[in-house]
Amino acid sequence: MTERTFIAIKPDGVQRGLISEIIGRFERKGFKLVGLKQLIPSKELAQKHYGVHKDRPFFGDLVEFISSGPVIAMVWEGEGVILNARKLIGATKPLEAEPGTIRGDLAIDIGRNIIHGSDGSETAAFEINLWFEDSEINEWKTSDYKWRVES
Ligand code: DAT
Ligand code: MG
Image (cartoon, rainbow, N blue to C red; front, side):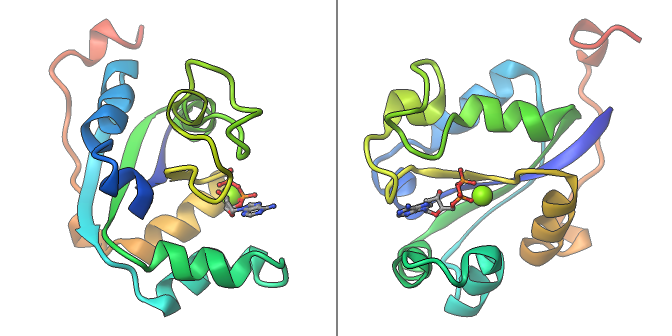
């Protein structure tokens, strides 16, 4: 099923010069970028984004960190992109993330795991709506779609 997910490169990924490395993995897999912007998230945005974790002991540090510098916010579209993106990203703890995944290859610390991806369809809808205006998301067709998905 064609769906959309929210992906963000966190301040550590941006600072470490990993933007193109990360975007490239989603492109090469065959997904389509339909929204992209750089912003320094407000505390309020970060708190809403991580609202499900508000009672966790790491919540304050997490919000502080996400709003500490530029983030690359993206919407990616494709067949099963929500779960596929979670697979490409790998487990939350870099030690548990398999080599070959973004976190498995590029991160060593749970508090600096460089990327966020929505964990389900409801979360994806919530997060896309939180981070993007409708007018910032583009509908377009890739010319090679038929070489990626059998119709
Ligand atoms: P994910 O980012 O894989 O969806 P999550 O939603 O459980 O993971 O947690 C959100 C972020 O919070 C995670 O990317 C890093 C941070 N985090 C989670 N658990 C943590 C912990 N035990 N200590 C420190 N930071 C943590
Ligand atoms: Mg999560």
